[in-house]
Image (cartoon, rainbow, N blue to C red):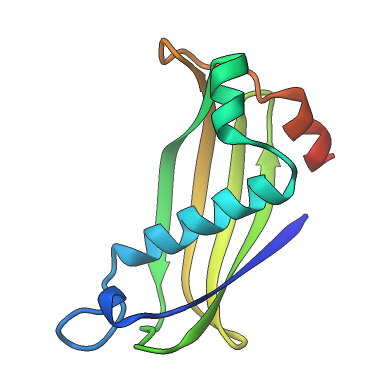
Length: 129
């Protein structure tokens, strides 16, 4: 399963050199994951209220290849690499055209209100099947 999220680089996303500030790539991939889950029909606020389950990032491995600049049109591609009962490993790539600028391997876990591991909700497991 692959998801694409389009965005444009705004002035506020850049640093003094005119490139996207390194930490903003994490914001871009977070937005892409949120939209991906929303497009699967998952309301994360309802999931928390009704099931007491939320997602948390457990691990990120990131590589920067080339900088994005003001007004660039980017795409964040999200691909599921691995799925277990309580964990997802996603590969997220930020592209300008066909050129990869940034890539991250992100481990997402489902957790209960007390912080303990929880199973991924059934609707998410079905959506990934």
